Image 1 (cartoon, rainbow, N blue to C red):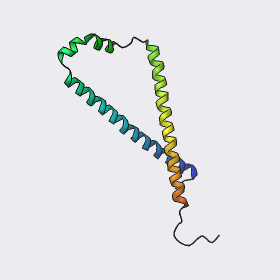
Image 2: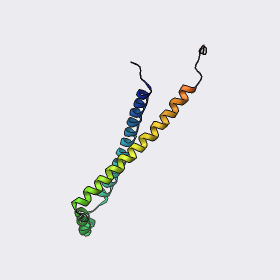
Image 3: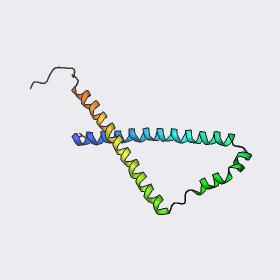
Image 4: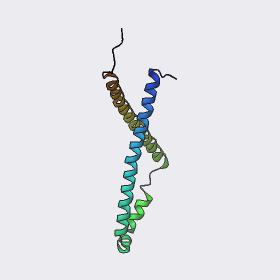
Length: 117
């Protein structure tokens, strides 16, 4: 089964998507792990006396700022749109890099005799 030019571009785009997804997963996982480690360290250092003294602050933080549900939904939609836009931009950049590398590979001198034309 031979691939046309569109098939190669499609394959390269899929490879770019996989590369970006893996890299974003690694970065996100590392960030979540660091945040959890920080929370654990703060939890170990927290004493009952400090917790009771700052009870109102912790309680207010848990209750949030009281923004309405519709505002949270709108903010969530914009955050997802921004995340998808960043993802697609990164895929586009990786795709262009892969295309440049592919062109460079194709342009190199091939061993053997030149074609007769």
